[in-house]
Every structure is written in structure tokens, then in C-alpha cells.
Image 1: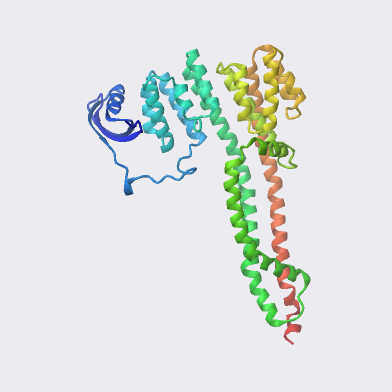
Image 2: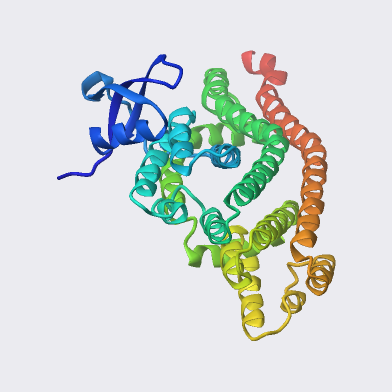
Length: 409
């Protein structure tokens, strides 16, 4: 017998006596009935919803099935609120599966709810979907289940994810304008080379005469662009597919991640983002009661940079042999002295999680200031470059026109 999740339509009578209709995902009708009774509702009718033909949802891998970090943050906060209010975990998961706006997350939550109903712990049920729920979230929930403070852990997860979403939003909003200007510049140059320059080239040929060398270069580039654009478009698609599959390969990251930190303009920004993410995740996990070695094993991978990952592994070895936590960090240039000293103070005073939170807040502000400074620097530079390129192309096109009367004679 298949245990595949199916969609059912139901009609129930709630505690107030009102008839409520809705949809729910489960393995069979009996599971739906049991779940509805657990929620305090009396089932009236349950029928399987057929999703074939035109009624079937269109699913595009990587687009329609994507679950954003923001959705996980909202889910964690709502789940914490419901558990704090006294709702059972099963009922809270059922409500979340029905009311979440993300359909992919709703399907996953329905499966998690079914697993919890069979007796699995929430952390074990979530670990079946590691592509959806980050290891940080799974391990923190496991610590909360063991310690009996799941609601507090869920709130910490929500705050952590919300801070991460806010950090990403700041970087994206600051970089949007330069990226848009850059794309427009490329499109404008390609458009001129493909459509405008050939018109002028035909006019020059009909008039005869020797063209100035800037115009010759422009005409040659226009001819090359007719073949380069299709080839470049195909190469870009192939590279995008390859990058999506291999961007997390260790061998590739070993080469690219150190270069990101050494980049002339964006290196400092990448470094600050990685430190902020590392300290926030590490502090959140320590505060939730996750053992230090286990926490270090997770936060190294979530930092997003293999240089920090290597440093964290050195810290793990130090802690495993009974030495200090902050000592090995001093030998890794990626960590500024201030971070090392603040972590050492936190370790000595027993307030490491608080100190890590302060470091994270500081670097969040640094990231915001750095992105604003980069934006204010890049915007005029890009406008100047764009103006220079387009201006040079226009001058090259109009140079032969200055001698057009001579050519006509």
C-alpha cells in the first residue's frame, strides 16, 4: 500500500457548531479524520481531491518549489506562539500547514505533522527534509526538546532567521541600483552595436571614402557582435546551469572563497557578512543549549565561506583537547582582533552567547554602512563609465559625417 500524501477536501463542525470547509494533506481518510478530531472538530464529510488534467498545479523545479528563509522565520515564530499559548504540537503543525502562504512549505509541514503523529520527535521529522530545514534549526529544536524549552528555542530561531533576512535585504537593496545600471549599460551598448551601427555602416559604404579608425573599430565590433551575442547567450545559459550544480563543490570553494575575501572593493563586505553570520548562528545555538562542539560543526558550514569554515575546524580541535575557544582564532587573519578579544572575554565570564550577539549586531551595522558607502561610490563611477562608453560610440559614428560633404563631392 502506498503512503504517498494525498489532498482531501473536508467539511467539519467546529466547537461553536459552525460548518467549516477546507483542504488538508494526509496519507488516507482515516488520518484526516483523526487529525480533525485532534483539532477539536467533528468531521461531516471527507473526500479525496483529484488533481489531474487542467486542475493540477504546474510545478517548476527551483521556482515554484522554493521555500524562502522568510517563510521559515514566520513559521518558527507562529509555531512558538501557538505552543506558548498551550496548543498541542500536532494541532499547531496542522494549523501551520493550512494557513502558511507558501504551498511548498505547507506540503512539507503536512508530512512533518504526519511523522509527528506516528510518534517521531519534531527534530527527527524535520531532519527528513534537510533540503528545506537548515541543520541549525534542526539541532536547536532537538536541544529544545531535550531541555523542555521548545517555545523559547523556536523564538530564537525566528529571531535568527529574521536577522539573516534583514541582512540579506540590506545588501540586495544597496546593490540593486548599481546592478540595474550595469545591465542597462550592457544592453544599450549591445543594442547600438547590433541595430544602430550597421545603419551608419551602410551609409558610409554607399558614400565611399576612408573611414576614421574609431569608426572602423566600431563597425568591426558590430560585425563581431552578430555572432558573439548568440554564442554568449548560449554560454551564459550553460554556465548558469553548471554553476547551480557545482557552486557548493569543495574544490571550487577552496579556490573562490579566499578570492572573495581579497577582492579589492567587495572583499571587506563579504568578510563582514561572513563574520556576522558566524557569530549570530553560533551565539543562537549556544543560547539554545546546543553543545559547543556540535554547534561549531554546524556554524562553520553556515558561515558561507570556506576560510571561516577552516578556522572553525581549528577551534573544534582546540575545544576537543580542553583548550580555549578563542585561542585558535587569533592565528586566522579573517577574524579581526576585536572579535577574538570579545569572544575571549565572553568565554572567561561565561557570557559567550551574549558577547557573540553583540559582535553580530556590530557587524550587521558595519555591513549596512559598508553597503551604503559602496553604493555611493559605485553609482557615480558607473554613470561616468556608461556615459564615456556611449559618448565614445556616438563620436565614432558622427566623425565621418563631419567630412560628408567632401565624400558627396
